[in-house]
Structures are given as C-alpha cells and as structure tokens.
Image 1: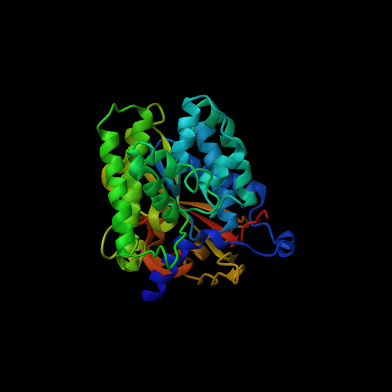
Image 2 (image 1 turned 120 degrees about the vertical axis):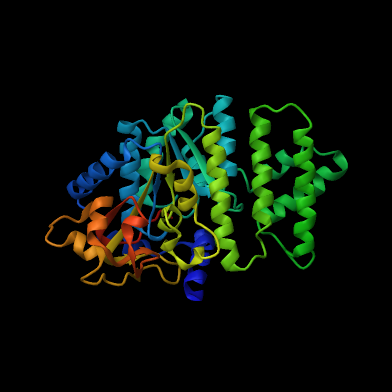
Amino acid sequence: MLKRLHESQTRLLRCAFQLFAFAWLLAGPQVCSAQARTTAVTQAAHDLCGKQLVLLGEADHGDGATVEFKAALVQRLVSKCGFSAVYFEAGTYDFLKMEEMVRARQPVDAAMLASSIGALWNRDEELKTLIDFLLPQVNSGAVRVGGIDDQIGAAGAFYSLGQLPNDLASILPQARRIDCAEQMRRRANYDFSDAHPHDAASIASLDRCLADIQQALRSGPIDSLTEDRLQMVSEFRRAIARDFLPIADFIPRRDRGMYDDLRWLMDHAGSHRKAIVWTANAHAAKSAAIGDEYRKAPNLGTLVHKEFGSRVFALGISAENGSHYWSRSDPTRPIPAAAPDSIESRALAGRSVDAVYVSEAQLKKLGAAPASFDLHHPHSEHWDEIFDGAVILRTERPPLRTP
C-alpha cells in the first residue's frame, strides 16, 4: 500500500520532469489503427453523448496511446454531442486568466492554452490536434476550458508563475502589496532558500496575505473578474493548507479540492452545461475501490456520482500490454502483460482490433476479475461498480514528445 501511495504522489509531482530520447520516439510503435480507434471512439461516444458530465480517465499520465484516444473522443463529443466545456486535471489559475481575456476579446494563443493544460500532457504530440481543435472555439466563446486542480506552480504556466501574484496583491494597501506578492511568487515558483524557507511559518504568513486579499475583494463590488480572483485566492489557500500533510491525507484532500473546483465551474457554466473532465482513472472512478489511497476519504468520481447520479459517466481506460512514460530516468517503463483472466485479455480475445469499448453491462458480465486501471497495477474488482464503461487498448506506449 505504501508503495502505491508513493507512486500516486510521484504521479502528481513529476509533471516538470518528463522528457525522453526523441530518436527512440521516432521508432516507437503506433498503438491503434485509425479504423480501430474510430470504431471504439464511436461506440464510447454513443454511451457518453446523452450525459451532462463525463469523466475521461487514463491508467497513468505517461500513456501516449490513451492521450491519442481521449483527444479523438473529446473532439467527437464536442462536435456531435453538444459538449461545450472541457476541464483538465490542471491548475485553474491560468484558465481563469484566459476566460478574462476571452471576455475582453483579447486573443488566446496556442501556447497559452497548452501551458494551462500543463506539462503532464502539453508536450504530447497526441494532444496537439485537440489544442488546434479547441483554440478557435475558446476564442469565440463556443467552448469553455478550465482546470479542476488548485495546485499551483505547473512548469511553464504563462500566468500563475508570473503576473498572478501582482494581480492578486494589487488590492492590498501599498505597505503590504510588495511583500505579499513576493510570498505568492515564491510559493508558486517553489523558490525557497535558507533565507526564505518553506516551513509552517512561511505558509502561515502567506495564508494571512491571501486572507487579507480575500477580505478586500469581498468588501467591494462583485463582478466576473472579482469572482474569478476570489476563486483563485480560495484555491491558493486550499493548496498551501496541504503542503505538509502526509501522503495518505494529501491525496484524498486533493480529490475533494478537485470536486469543489468542478462544482464551482459547473455553477458558473452559463450555457456551457455539458462538460468533459480530462483526468486519471483513479480520480474518474465512481467508487473509491479504485485504489488504496482512498481508504480515508472518497475520490473525485465518487463525489461527482453521488451528486449527478445518472447524468455523469466515468470512462476508464487500460491496456493489455506495452510500455509507458514514467520519468526521465525511466522513460519506457514496461506494463505488466495482462493475465489471461483479466478484463483486458478477455475484452480483446478473439478480436483483431487494437482498441475495444466495453459497456457497463459487458463489464458486469465479465464479473470480478483483475484489471490494471490504476497505475497499470492489476487488482481484482467488479469493474462495473467502478466505471460506467471502459476502453481497452491492445498496446500502450509512451507519448511522442516535443522538445
């Protein structure tokens, strides 16, 4: 259990360090033929189309074939099913800045959108088609994009690492403005030192700054910009409140935070009432049985299903074999081959395709069986109780990464 908790925490923190050899990537195998992927996308979209909220998972954040599949599925859901919001498991701050720009009719460019999505995915070649697809619709207001995570400090973020501290601190009296902005900047960039350590005292001081900003914002007129900045402050405070929690407490508290963020986004959706959430299987699952890390508190998907009921759909994605990206020192970690009695092997048995959609009814028929939906580690569950449907890829691979 401790090993799985450690790996789950590693998954949350490694976004700034993902890189591997481009020469190998050029030789890397493509997982799904276009025809097989299109068929599975069509079948999945059929079940997702009528929902208000869909959670699209992935076994781990280094799964390139899964990113390719999800990007195609998102485009289908937006184009054919009326979904007009896409929310990523990424910090909300930069997305809210982009919304401010859209309201002011200032153009959002591809680099801004990519940096907001975050380094877990934004250098994946498999995501580029989705960014190109979303960008004009974001600028026109036809599609809303957002982040459901309160964590701050994503590598390359165009707004939260730079201008955000000054914007939030600008409402404070001059005497505190510079100091509080510097404290926010230090935490956002994780720029600590012996002179400015990251400890309980520094976090308490930063929280006092944020509380003062919150009070000052609430004391004046509440327009759209003020609402967004109040949300940024609230999320910043919640993020730093977890800074020194044990891993076993950090993970479920983060999921609760993502649920709160998603609820805020849905409450402020306006016409964008049908939403897609791009996340991991562990967060999307409708049961905390997805992983041991949720023994203390429920995961995001459990909370969402409790509120939205039949209006929400959790899609899990796994693979029978292959490899995926884990870290710079381990860029092609093998995935343990699925056992003959696993969900993956049985779903693909007797089929010549490289990707298959498995409905909830089909998952139920397969019964209790091992599957590797969580970090590619197999364990046995009744998977129809954890996902509303699943996509099984024959072979996973690392993403193709841009420099």
